[in-house]
Structures are given as C-alpha cells and as structure tokens.
Length: 306
Ligand SMILES: Nc1nc2c(ncn2[C@@H]2O[C@H](COP(=O)(O)OP(=O)(O)OP(=O)(O)O)[C@@H](O)[C@H]2O)c(=O)[nH]1
Image (cartoon, rainbow, N blue to C red):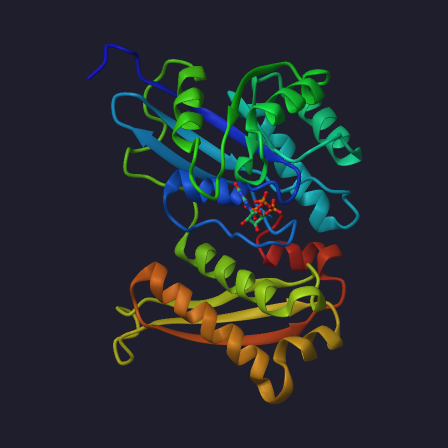
C-alpha cells in the first residue's frame, strides 16, 4: 500500500492508422478483444477499455478510429465521434511508429484536429521499438519532430507486440491523471458487448482471408444472438450475421467457388468466438449487397454507426 492518492480519468489513444493502437489495447488488457489486422483503418468505433490498478488508479482508455478523409458518411460519423471524445479526455496518448522519419499530411490533419478539440496534455507514445536498432535515437528524432508541433508532456518507448514498456506507459498515464475515485466498478473492462466482439471477430476474419480483394466496404451486423440458455436444444451459442458489401463482385469473392471462402471465414470466426466466449458456437453467415451503404444514413443507423 502506498500513501499516494487514487487517480482516474479518460485517456484518448490517438494515432495514424496502423501505428498499433489495437495491439496496444490488447497488451494493456492482456486479452484479445480489440480487432487487430495488418490493414489500416479497421477500427471504426470509439471503444472504451477500463483498466483498474488497486490503490493506484483507474484509466478509461478510448480507442479512436484512425483519422482519414471523411469522404463518405461513415467517415463523417467516425470523425464526429472522435471530436466529441477529444473534448472530454484528461490526457491524450499520441501513438507513433518508432520508424517514422518525417511528418506527413496525415500527421498534420491529426495534430490540427487534436489541438482544435482538446487542451489535454499529450504523452508521446513511441511504439514498435522492436523494429528499430537504436530506440534512444528514435526517441530523440521523434521528440524533435513532434515537439515542434505538440507540447509533449511525457514520452514512453514501447513495443505493443512484445509488451516491453507497456507497464511503464500505464504508470506514466496514471501518474498524470487527476486525483479522483473510480469511474467504473473495478471489475469492469469495457463498454463492448459480446455481440460487438463477435462482429469484430467476423470482420477480422473477412479482412484476413480476402486480403486486397475486398476493401473496407464490408460491414458485419449480427441479426440474431442466442445464448445456450435461450437455445437449449443445441447447447450452443447461436449467431446469425449479415455481411454487407457494396458490389455484387465483392459478394462473389466473399462466397468463393462453391461457397468455399465463406465456409473458411465462418470456420475461423467460429473457432475464435468459441475461444473468446468458452461456448460451442453455431455461426450462420449471409452475404448481402447494399450499394453505397457507407453513404446511406438509414443503413448506417441500422448498423449502429450513427
Ligand atoms: N513489430 C511490431 N509490430 C507491431 C507493434 N504494434 C503493432 N504492430 C503491428 O502493426 C499492425 C497494425 O497494428 P494495429 O494494432 O491493428 O494498428 P491500429 O493503429 O489499431 O490500426 P487501425 O485499426 O487501423 O487504427 C499489425 O500488423 C500489428 O501486429 C509493435 O510493437 N511491433
């Protein structure tokens, strides 16, 4: 027990697509919950993850969608969410890739929007240090690069993949939060539902299996989710999900020759969902074409993005 006061607050995780926000969340939680994919822009919603350290503090991390040009309505909805979140946070973790050599247009947009929407202090989080030969050189370089644009209050070097430095980030963050009590019950881990987790797993498997062929115009919506208690004759979790794509050709790719692709996606998703939930799962997947769903208010509302 220390005599230090308990601290708590909300912390936004901000970064360009693919810098490793989701991997970092997984490392912090020690649990595979957030979607991780080698393709950028897979995080679509601002999800909260709560970490409680007994007698130290409670951090509510908010995973923000990677910023990108709001070309379609989905992009605009994501951006609106991000601005609202930024206004409320106590601290911002700006995540960068240790290999970054210069700031590009994407950084400009992110930094400007961050400054416009929040005056919270910023921790520069330098991720992927396992990929550079000299982490201290990377630190110097990135502090110089970002320091010109952001008032950096602290710097943490880490590898979300190996876990190196992740604990240090947590203690740095807690130390910078205001004194305060629990914001959530100590056992609470996040505001995602089992349905949300299942949707993300299915989407992850689609992205993994289809590679370049099916772009980010895929949405997964679970239409039926029955626990074994509600479905005793099968003694399994029953999930029926619709996969929306924008074009007929994408539907063809997803289904594959003789339905092989969809079967593979279904099998991999089912195995992962079973692993996460600890139940046998019956997974029923349907592919549907909705031209322009990313620009349709009605569709986005139905899918829970608006
Ligand atoms: N070598 C290495 N790879 C990492 C590290 N952190 C993340 N990655 C990889 O980088 C890729 C992107 O990671 P994500 O966690 O999906 O990135 P993200 O920032 O959440 O991406 P969006 O969902 O697009 O916002 C994945 O292939 C990760 O395995 C790290 O510390 N070291």
